Length: 222
Length: 228
Image (cartoon, helix red, strand yellow):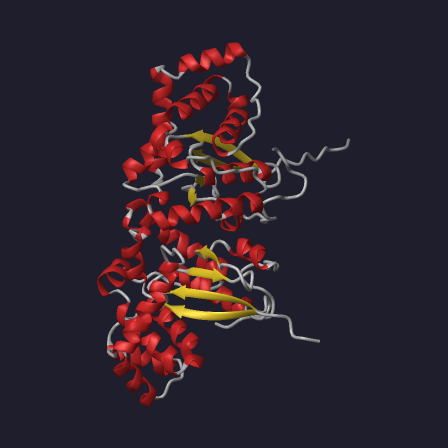
């Protein structure tokens, strides 16, 4: 009698991405993690949170509030858009978009989607970035009926609470900005916090994986 | 055949800044590989922060806590022997780096061939061995380790109080502000001989800097170049 030797599937490492679409750097982190999900065999969990709440609780301020830094960011984002191959374009009035209009409603909408139709969370998220940080908008593929539901859900306390919950979870991890990446490198241990879109070589080391640059072969989701 | 034209890269730095140490070592490693005319420009980060309306990242508690881990990981990634001092806040915010940067400036004005060695020794003191970098005796020890003679050290210790040295430090600081700097390290890449140089901030934009210079990024420890 032959014995079958079944090879167990390698255990996926969980990586949580806490993000707010008001943050352009979070778009880079979002796309890179999506590109690496299969390459690094990740269990990638999207965690939309509210950056305004993080900034307030962590007593932080957006980098663009420092004039020279805000000016530098405009160039930095252009260069990184090219480096990461993400179609980011600066809006006419970034300050208005980020600081006046904000992202609370948007993050609540994404939360509403995530709670009832999580298979669409990434598409909706990406579409939001395309709207506020790019010119061309793609359709996220929701039906009119679904959109109506989510627009209604946004005002529901369960959605507001879920957004608050993820924001507080990130604060529990000592977050101070977006993107906040929590890498569960050791199944049983404390996850590692990695901040920003410029620590992927470090994240790779923590996960015991190889960094193949921002556009690894074979993975393109835009 | 004419030698290929070197591209000028200026590194504005203050040894109080640990991230600037990573940038310093990487640029030194890449000087020949990228055929750079690498110019060291010691400036005063305290002056930059004040003029630019900026605050050190560690002032945000969660961020300060994160930085401790970030620096450990980057030390490994960059292969730089950085170790956190027992009291980084005291070193960075109480003692500061004005005297140290003036000493480095004094060296740079009379013995520029020794600027890098003295600079590196300062980082080894405050961001590796948890040793002081502000007292005259500390500066003397650093100078000796860097290969200066006792006589040279005595000159530089005296020059530190000279208005020409103070002015030179102020001048480099203001030059960086003229470039719209807001922190350290501030890397000015003269990518186009005649045009405006490009500002690159931090130690995490080397792939971008490579693209701007039309060069290839071979990682933090490129083959053949090790200066530690």
